[in-house]
Every structure is written in C-alpha cells, then in structure tokens.
Length: 216
Image 1 (cartoon, rainbow, N blue to C red):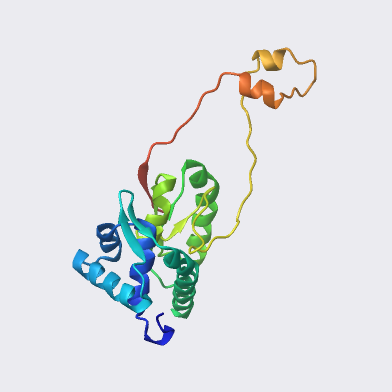
Image 2 (cartoon, helix red, strand yellow; image 1 turned 90 degrees about the horizontal axis):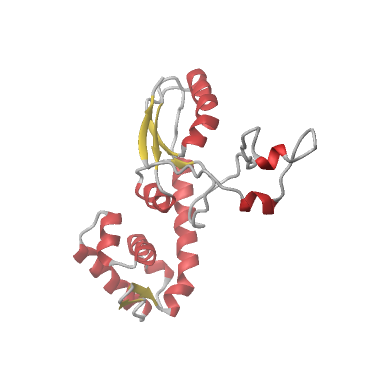
C-alpha cells in the first residue's frame, strides 16, 4: 500500500479524472496532458497501490474495489486543497476588471441578474459577467475545467463541488380564464387537483442551449 508522504498530488488529480471520465484520453483532455502522460501516471499509481485501480471494459475504465474505497478520501482531500488555495488568494472586487462566467437558464437570468448587476455597479464597477445556458450534464465539466466560475439553478452536483441554497421557489400552473378546469369551479379562487393537472393538456417550454453576454 502506498505511503501518503510519497504521493504526488498530480497523481491524485489523474486518479480523480479517470474516476470521472473512465477514459485515458478524456482524462488527458480534462487535465490538458498527453495520453502517454496520463498512462504513465496510471502506471505509477498502480505500482504505488499494488492494484490495477482501473480496468478496461466495454463501458470504459472501471474502478476496482480498492479504487472505489479510495475515491471519497481522494476527492474530498483535493476539494479541501482547492478551497484552501482559493481562500488564500487575495481579491479586491472594487479594483478587479475580471470577467466571471456564470451558468444559468432564462429563469435564473430574470431572477438573479438584475439585482446582481445593480450590486456590482456599486461595489465592483469594472467586473463583467458572461452568461452561459448549458445542459445540466455539462455543468460539472464546465466548472471543473474553468470554462465557468459559478452555476446557479436547480441542480445537484458531485460532492467535490461547493454549493449553497440561495433561493426557493414554487411551481405555478397557468390556465386560460375559460379553461374547463377553471370555469367548472364554483369557488371564487378556483383550484385544481394533482389528478386534474396530470390529465390536462400541457404546453412544454424547453429552452435551447445558448450563450449570452450581459453588459452594463
């Protein structure tokens, strides 16, 4: 078994990438390394832990039982290191002219961007925001690669990402005033049951993936 004091941090990053991508080539692309470099790192990991760690299958590089046991400690350790580095870096919002990239959908843009832009105009006038609308399956890769700095939305990310609840909302059903479910009700404020809602015809709005730039 490997000793913690001889582990190379870069090897742990390769382990994390292989665990997520299940592919040497994909891990190399994520880490911006060559495939031989990742293969070499995997070879060193296998020697250190005396275990294959990742076995090639039709579905990709599957982790062994040992790799699965190591996954949480390694990912949590890397997350702690990244958080510590982030906290140690000085940042003066009032003087920064950095462009931050946010991921959110159209509802998020309507809800959060106006107050955020107003606050930035007062406390960080030179900061710019770039907004991306992506599919949920792209959130983790975009944040992990640095393509985006922050994601806002009704999403669930891996434990290696930090998250915080900032808003709660409720769903509302919109019906025409002469809709049968409304006109048949004798109540001054008509309501519908869950069964009525599911049986009714619906209009589904599916936002297209798009990129927008917010400027002030």
